[in-house]
Amino acid sequence: MTQRAKTDELIAHALDALQIELPSWGFANTGTRFGKFLQPAAASTIEEKFSDAGEVHHLTGVCPTIALHVLWDLPDGATGVANIKALAEKFRVRPGSINPNVFQDQLYKYGSVGSPVPVARTAAMAHLLESADLAKQLGSRDVSLWFADGSNYPGTANIRQRRKWFEESLESLHERLAPDQRMLVEYKPFEPAFYHTDIADWGMALLLAKKAGPKAKVLVDTGHHYQGQNIEQIVAWLLGDDMLGGFHFNDRRYADDDLTLGSIDPYQIFRIFHEIFYFEWETGKRADVAYMIDQSHNLKGKIEAMIQTVTTAQELHAKAAIVDHEKLATCQAKCALVDAEVCLKEAFSTDVRPAIREWARSHGLPEDPLDAFRKSGYLERITEVRSKRNAASVSSYA
Ligand code: RM4
Ligand code: MN
Ligand code: MN
Image 1 (tube, rainbow, N blue to C red):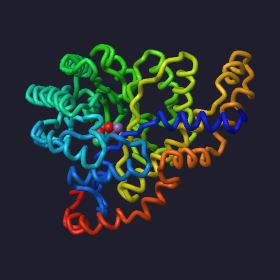
Image 2 (image 1 turned 180 degrees about the vertical axis):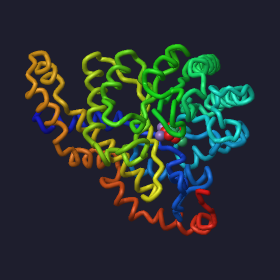
Image 3 (image 1 turned 120 degrees about the vertical axis):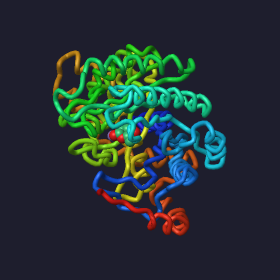
């Protein structure tokens, strides 16, 4: 086998294994805290979100699931399940992770499961348990948890007490999960809370997940780190402890910017994928990791941005798949620093696009999904149907 054929085979294998979940909220009008710029084609119903996700899956072939936010997509709880199942049939995308929402209601002003207000904690717990049940009914494996809980001023919150409430709540949620379900604990250093956040980093998420039980894992949102933090090291450590549950993909320059994956630092995403492949090569185990997108585009066309993200993920995943692990391990053991780094960079600088196009062709998929989308007429069709309604919706900061 030639080197080229070997590389192409590795890439095809990697692409076959990569599935990426789309966020329902990524197709809707979302904005910054200063306002939204409304898009004429944005989705506002659950049917429209499914339709857009179905279109992205149809063109890329690798996005069979859509993440749902309970409050936004299942506002009436279990009553909405039959409809979601019907939409999944119709648009050929299954419900993916179920995201409880315990940050939007007025009740959560001082937090959810970490709030000193007992009714807030009770309501939040009930919503978490309901979310686990909804996930069961929808056949979703993961309940994906992000808490906005925190405080804005020193001295205003009992940090240790709040941690105990978090531990208790996550343990109760864990008990409610079916044997094949998981709960993913997401962390974020700040925002909306600006002094302390109850689950601020991967260490806190890890401790809480370990305490909750074996079905609890950590979720790494690539945008939820301080400047300069080594995310691939966090990934390597979590993998080593079988505690990496999944990712929320996006990119960032400053904080939780929700920019398109790889738009600022593609090398970092490559290094993350590399740690996963290296782990799998070394241990012979499969990393059981859910890849999910968490991006809300305010300015870019939503479906285009989603396709761009998926193809970027495929490219960086393919590059990481062709790292020569044998050679890298030998270089590392000999402390051949330059050679080790060159070995890694060799893969990163390989143009994998021809192999990806070949893979797409062989699967009956468009070689250029973005171009295929632009030629499909889908955007024009939905713009026609949705623009009036979108123009009528208001958005203001104060
Ligand atoms: C957060 C976080 C969560 C997402 C919310 C809406 O910043 O990334 O995953 O559910 O935003
Ligand atoms: Mn996230
Ligand atoms: Mn975020």
